Length: 162
Image (cartoon, rainbow, N blue to C red; front, side):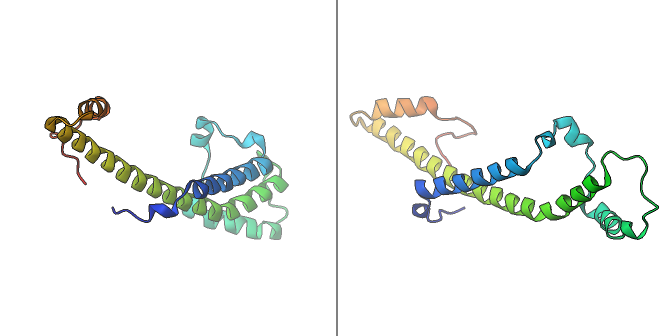
């Protein structure tokens, strides 16, 4: 892990990213039927298509009109809705992949920022400890306040890894 140009990531940039994400969320909320907000149970029960079932659904919807007498008699949704669901399913994957890529990029930025900001503060705590031991004015107050908040884990909590 190394520090990449943090000067390029300003509050303006972060606000712009957040605004674009919120705009995308608002757009999805606008076109999404409110009844599509699934519960945890519905998410578990839902049948996913995935790569294993995709050839089956692609073949069915690509050929069903050639066999108009072979339509299901009892269905959960009307045929027109099923066709629309197939269209959504077959076109939404790319958007999901882009969203996953965005989440991964944001998580990487966040982890990188957390790592370097924490490591700097941790080294600052050690500098305050050294200052306290040397009797520098105010170092004891600063170190004691930092030390009370410092998460002590591992064998040597005073030796953070860079």
